[in-house]
Length: 365
Figure 1 (cartoon, rainbow, N blue to C red):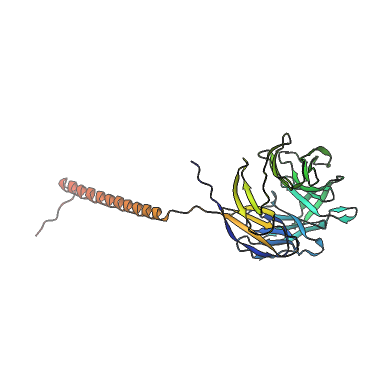
Figure 2 (figure 1 turned 180 degrees about the vertical axis):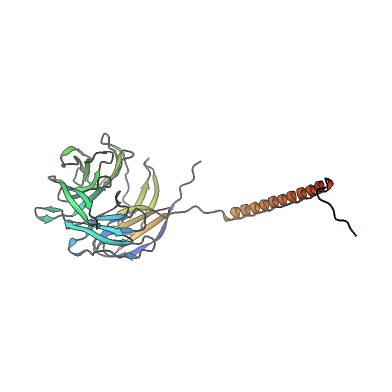
């Protein structure tokens, strides 16, 4: 019989995050929490919520709209990619525990005006970066580093899709070629999804999901992607034939639900405020499943960051104490038996040796 699923328990979070939170991510080791929002990109210790020194502040780059953290194959350190509302893309790298900026450039523009970057994805096997911006621009870049660790981008292609507002972007992970296909998810009224050729951005396929896409997550192991329909709620789609597997209607409620891949609701994590959940991130921190959630804010005020951790199994102290005492008693009995056995056999051996004349008993006077 499978062990019961333990619930998530609310933990002390962050009461006053500077400005709104629009993006959340964690490093691969779960040791650094990255927040993006009106105050730019910030770094935090996820256990104590102490701020970690960041290389640069928000400045003219504008609010951070998307954050992605990866670990490259050829460089086993954490790398953060951020995009902003003014079309800036920048890269931070952790070198010996200190974060440094290795690249910064304004690359998302439409009619010579900056547009906000809405999606970033990185393929560690080919060191290729793709991003999309709200003006309908999709770009692909090759990302290489020099000996000093500085990042250099080489443009592969730049494509403008007319009357299209992309919200998320992803590589087709099942594609093992150098130029992997690209999926772009739109937030238009019918939520179109474009499949583009990886080497030049040419449109291969286009299909509609019938509603605006607020976000998208892809599981290539199962061949499924989960879409956040901002009107109807989340929906699960099968990639092979672009059919909807299931809808997850959620009533208007200020909570975040965990949903298993069968579609059953597992648990309700309530933020207990009058605000809606804006972004969610999950991680394994010291082997404990942890959920982070930030509510949406209409004004540029300090935001809250909520945390839940999965309850750890409680140990039966009384039973373990009794078991420990019993094992100690057994060990003592075994040791006494061994000592008695050795003593008995040693005495009998000495008796036999005296009978054989090997050992002579000294004469008494």
